[in-house]
Length: 222
Image 1 (cartoon, helix red, strand yellow):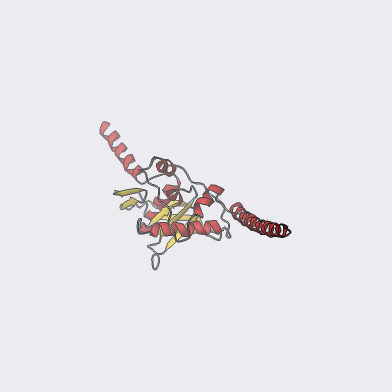
Image 2: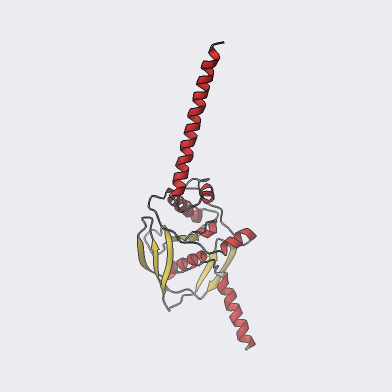
């Protein structure tokens, strides 16, 4: 009969160690979230996958998705040691490169995060790399316009020609180190930047088609 207290002590000690380990893990997760731009709900969604796992792309065919796609994203302060921001960036690249999508650019709202983050394929650089930009904005547009065929991962099965994109833009953004950068971008890559930054403002490329159709209708009335 004297063995039971010993067994109870061993079991209780093991249980206490497991609980302490779990508490430490929870504390570590909470500390990571506290230092990140992502809230707890976003962090849970983000950490469900590995860095090579693509996100689900939101589409206008889904009512809930469409409402989010029409929402404005928010800027944030880039913390160089934000591990969740690094993971998000890696998963954003994985999404745009995924065989199911194969795009040339994507914005955070398209995967359900209202953050000022975009991923662009740089056709104007060697090897045409995909790069992520934080808090991007266009401070200058060239008067020269370039007609271009555009499609959108959030509007599947459709492409249209737009004649509203500037040939060159002056881009401002922050890199992963939190450094503010300026860059002049031209040609097709400039179109991609304009398209993706529109997403951050809840604008879809088809809005320009509807605007043109409206203007033409008014012209006919007058």
